[in-house]
Length: 384
Image 1 (cartoon, rainbow, N blue to C red):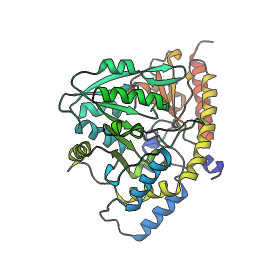
Image 2: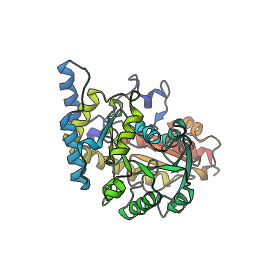
Image 3: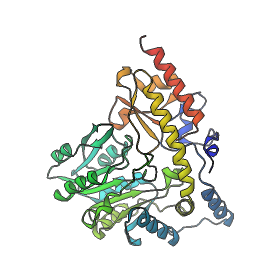
């Protein structure tokens, strides 16, 4: 794939896009919800065309080839062997967070979540009649990490579940093996279940870093882990709704299946079709996408840090920038940036009002225009 394919501006207005409909009939650039403005890989488009040409869209089982592709992928990338029965297919990763809460513990039991974090981490415990226990992230050098001391101190006799995100959304951290081993030790010693959201695993931007699934560290931690993955963020197919959980503990898997029974629908056939094509034939396309995103990241980090009032730490993974706006002293940050012409995600939704999250998974021209608007807005706001 040529870099120019990612430079292509595709008009998403009037397509019922969540991202673009929020600011319809305005000049605000939508840089919020985590889908990209890149067309899906050609292999995915071709597979969908072929399936649509078949013309029948009835109830569909999980394709055997897709199961084999996921098994082969996990073993090839992470030396992690899973059985076909370990895979639980879901119409969305957020569904998995809710099911993890309902499949572990009982009414009123504790669920630990890092903070700041992707908002469903904080809403799913409450909606599952569980008690949310927030544990702060800490900044170590240039990286946002889960504070393991604070985590262990927060565990109560009623705590059953720990929600974890790797790579971290919104901080962009890729956890190292030793860090994961320390986390696994806490989980095992306190006999917790951990639900690990690893949806951004294929979007590691920093050369030399590699994603490591928590459950791949060994059988003991695997027996206490629900791993959530999906092709949606990587290949921009979130609207097709195909995700999966890896649950290697048979009893935990049965509890998870019981929690979803009669409520959570199966994955639709076009979601399966797109996922299979992406995993089977999309890796070369993703390598080109990663190169493009790295260049966007490097441009953004340099540009944002040159704007008075803003700070952006290095981003190891994802196409999401967690921008520290505390020095800008903005009364209503979201409204301020919208008036400047850029629609970002407010940090308060993630648990920290001193930040904004910006999605840089877009053509460079859009990103450059967004930075220009942010710079102009803040230079007009801040005293000379």
